[in-house]
Length: 268
DNA sequence: ATGTCCCAGTCTCTGGGA
Image (tube, rainbow, N blue to C red; front, side, top):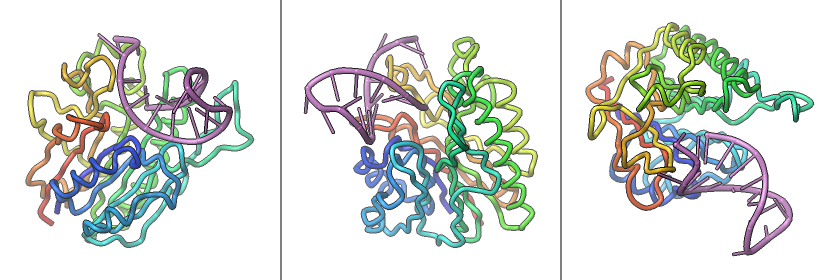
């Protein structure tokens, strides 16, 4: 079974690249993040023509996650119990927290597969950073419940956290920034501690398993990236992995996302 | 690294987010 995760940074802008990539990589399941389209506006007919069923959780301009599967798509869950929602910041608080479209899961070929888009956090001093930590803690609880239910679990997505200093091009460049702080990394460790393993993919080129490179300043060309797109798998999957790679070709050329797909193959 | 890309609305520019 081949499962992949890809933050496409707008499915509307990326549709030609998405279709091209599906035809070439042929994943059984693709977890998509940042669709940036309303619930009913995912191009399900276009991916359907390639043999994929779609489950989308979208809200419009921001966020949005989807599962594309040709291995079945049952018991779809949009969002999860305990999601704290985003309540705005001190300057512009909301009346009540707004639940954002950041998680979807389903059973695909007997595996509970999640597509998640973790809040960015903006700065360590911001309310958005607290939201990020609370959101990750709630996700941990929801995933623990899935594991208790017994099916293999794979949590894929854009976690907006680099698990170690080796997962960023220069730790010094991230001093005072989100994505590398101890509380964020502790939140990932707590998620792993529910009974998952980090399936670290191999880069197609070079030593660094980066999955994201900023569009600005020639960062991709200089391989100044980060590994923030992760696959966390329970033992039935992580123990059966036959290959895992980062498709950096998808980051090249005309109109790429700023993220590359992460592809995992396992025998189950 | 703050050099780009994407979105919606104020709509051929601007501001927010990443």
